[in-house]
Each structure stands twice: as C-alpha cells, then as structure tokens.
Length: 392
Ligand code: RFL
Ligand code: PHB
Image 1 (spheres, rainbow, N blue to C red):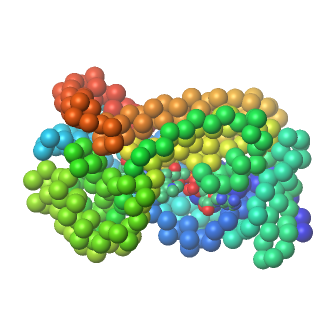
Image 2 (image 1 turned 45 degrees about the vertical axis):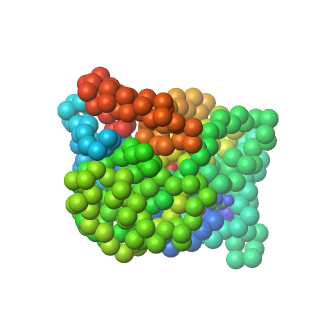
C-alpha cells in the first residue's frame, strides 16, 4: 500500500516531533514513522535542561504553554569541589540569560498532543523502516506495519531516528566521515519524588567520581553518579545509590539531602560522536542521528532543536520559493554549532569526571582549573555562555 507526503520523518523523538510541528504550521505535510509505541517513548527518562533557543522554537511550534507554566527558570548552576560549592551566575555573566528545567518526556508529550490535535499522522511500531532512492528526486520510505509492507513516496526524508537509527546506516560508508570518542565510564541516573537538595543544579567533582544533582520539578529530583560503563541498575539498590551520592557531596549539601524510593534507575554510556555531512541528497539527518554528546553540558536535546531550526527554515524556504540554498547549506550551518557544543560537552566531562588515568597529577590539574574558573570572570563567562546556549 502506498501513501504520499512532502516530508517523511523517521523517528518520533524531540527532533522528529519538533520538525513535524514547525512544518505543519508552515502548511507542509509530514508523516512520522516510528519504531516504538507512544507509551514506550513517553517512558524514557532523558534530558531536563532547555536553552532559551530551544524554548523559543517550542513556542514557535505552538507547544510552549505548559512549559511556561510548569518549567523552572534557572539563572545559574553550582560547581562543587574540594568540599565547597561555588555558584556560576549565568544571568549576571550573560546579560540576563538562563535555562528552563522541563523534562524531555514533557516536551515530547506536548509535541505529541499537538500533532494529534493537528491530525498529522504518526505510524507507531513500524518495523524494517528503510529510506531509499534519496540520491534521486523521488525518495521512498519503506516499512512494515501490522504485517504488511508499505511505502511512502515523498520529496524529502528527515532522519530523526537517534543514534541507533537506520538513516545514518543507510548511507554508503564512503560518503560519510565519523569522529568519535567513547568515555571509560557511564552515568547511573535515579529519579525520585523527593524535593531537590538545592534550588539549582549542582555539578560535583569528587575523587570518588562525578555526581550531579538535578530535578524535574520542585517535588521531583534527578540525581546522577559516575559509574563503570558496564554497571547495571539492578546492582544499585536505592540505599547504595543514596549512600554513594552522600559521600560525593560536601557536608552541608549531604545533610540537606532528602532520599526516597526510586521511580526509575538507568545507566547511560558517555560518548562524543559526529557524522559528517548531515545531508545526503534528499535525506537530511537531525539530532542524535547525526551526533552524540556526553550529557555533562546538557546539550543533547538542545542540539536536536538547533538542527531542527536550520532544517525547518531550509525546507520552508524551499517550498515557498523553490530555492535550494538552505538545503545546500544546512549541513555546514548545523555542524558549525554542533562542533562547538561537542567541544563544550567534552570539556565539561574532562573537568568533572575521574578518568582511569587521571592520577595525582591529573587530579591537581582539575582542581587548579576549577579554582581558576570560579575566581575568573572571563572563565566563568566562557562556561556560562556555552551552558545557556550559543546563538543560532
Ligand atoms: P531520540 O530521542 O533518540 O529519538 C529518536 C526516535 O527514533 C526512533 N527510532 C526509529 N524509528 C523508526 N525506525 C527506526 N529504525 C528507528 N530507530 C530509532 C526511536 O525509537 C526514537 O523515538 O533522538 P532525537 O529526537 O534526536 O533527540 C535527541 C535527544 O533525545 C538526546 O540528545 C538526549 O536525550 C540525550 N540524552 C541526554 N541529554 C541531555 O542533555 N541530558 C540527559 O540527561 C540525557 N540523558 C540522553 C540521556 C540520551 C540517552 N540515550 C539516547 C541512550 C539518556 C539516554 C539513555
Ligand atoms: C538531567 O536533569 O537529566 C540533566 C541535567 C543536566 C545535565 C544532564 C542531565 O547536564
């Protein structure tokens, strides 16, 4: 059975949904084809920090109402090391900027609801999704649904299917260059309905390893511990997690920690990855399908949004004027911003984690850099302007 649309989107994560909504508002038809079910996607706990540019894009998509009502505005973070906490005051350093705390799960839910209200189609639980003929002017997206082979004829295919998706994998190897660094550790995350230990996020450098105190709301906390990449959440009963977190916090913060039963616990590997270019004829990659950052700089979701900003502009311009220019420059424009976020995330990761080869000298280097950082307005400004998000 065949369908036709203007832009076929693979993946119903934040990148695919945001692109779909922006195109819909510009009168461009899309069909999203997704491997998982809606409930599965809404059960994934991921990012929680939105840059102002991401919030503006969600507003532009007409999906910002609940975000503005429930999201928490943070105008700084704390860095904790050597038993003390130091605030980095974003508002003061960046001319009033900050970030919004609002979970990726909630962003996804709002975008899915808007898509449903707009009657724009999503095919969930599609199998054997495969983009084809994107080198020519008539690409086709193949998939299997409820046991039947189906195809969508389209003008463009947007590969928004994350790191393990098929889009990047369907490009012949000689056309793509990959840059990669895997880190020798992971993050163990725990979500619990307890009030956060602090009003803002606390990033902790400790000799036992990195820790992060984050949140989803005033009553829901998200904590992370650096762990071995091979560790399983089952090996970390709640009590063990809380005890280890307490050990990595300074005394005053540890004393204020409220613990409770975990709602979710998972281990995420840390990786830096970029595939170049991001356009292959009429197949355009966006978000994790093209690049991955370690979560330390809170950039993953925000990069997916900035890609979608450039890509939606290019497609809207193409349908309005017939121009190819935006499509031709998409990859270079997106990658210029991607690489800066890759650098920032790598730097934050290097500064805050314990590496197998850190050693006593490396440890002193980290502490000296942190000490310099919190004493230098120039260094704090560099951190602040990257964290709140570089301009599009
Ligand atoms: P997503 O969110 O992975 O969505 C891709 C969608 O594509 C679907 N898909 C397919 N659909 C059809 N056919 C196929 N063959 C398909 N293969 C995959 C998937 O089911 C999915 O629904 O990518 P997107 O939209 O680019 O969004 C990117 C963000 O999700 C990502 O950058 C962040 O969540 C990264 N990330 C984190 N970032 C942070 O800033 N802070 C975090 O705490 C944080 N935690 C995480 C994370 C990523 C994780 N992953 C991907 C393993 C924790 C985890 C576990
Ligand atoms: C989160 O709340 O999940 C979170 C916050 C900041 C990060 C990474 C993850 O840098």
